[in-house]
Length: 276
Ligand code: BTN
Image (cartoon, rainbow, N blue to C red; front, side, top):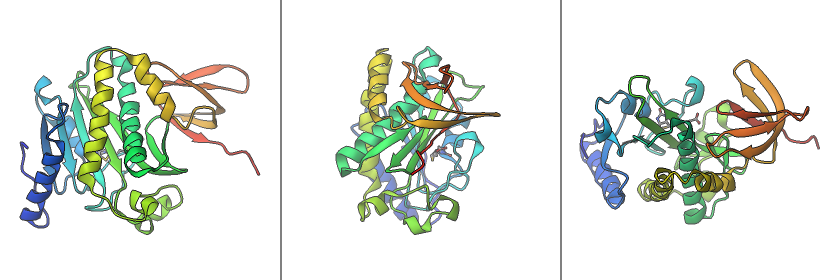
């Protein structure tokens, strides 16, 4: 680890957590360096602001608590202090950048695989970045590139792990869940992070070999959005359609009622349920 934590509870406790994370990730070739924080504003913000070049590739930033965690479109990312998995990974992926959105999906796949294989949970993705269990969101991914460092990607993920569902904010109680609520027990975050990164390492390898079709295929398998009737919110635009395909670069193709198709590269996609 390069940077010591700034503990807000006990320094010894923070060091122990730091060591536990490091030992879980020692076998991961992709993770070259770890920064652990007891409290930070946002792991993504920290990662984006780091000065440096290619040597930052593989730097993992993990926090126990975020005071200003952020989601897509500037939304707030809520966390339950000391209970969730909050991390950002810095990557300098090979070009072309048009394919980088696949990496967001690939991290989502890696999370779903870990939840399904380790805990038997039926997790799936809601395009582009939500991890769902049943119909509730348990995690999200935020990928950011700074205009100052366009060759570098920061891919951050937040997972609701050991918090109770009752402690979720009122506005999320219907739509979100936690792993503890789903499993009926707590789980260790270090081995979960290790499992996710082990999966992601494989996906990243496929990406680096430019086998994007294979990667897209594995993303399609975990995509719960495909085949669904959806409402698309895209800036000022809002329309309904059927999510028919995931492209090789991770775009979602939506077919409108008129038969016209549109490939989305961002936006929100909400499933429309048939009326009972
Ligand atoms: C979303 O669902 O909109 C994406 C949420 C991403 C949250 C994670 S938590 C770790 C990393 N740091 C942040 O500030 N955000 C991401």
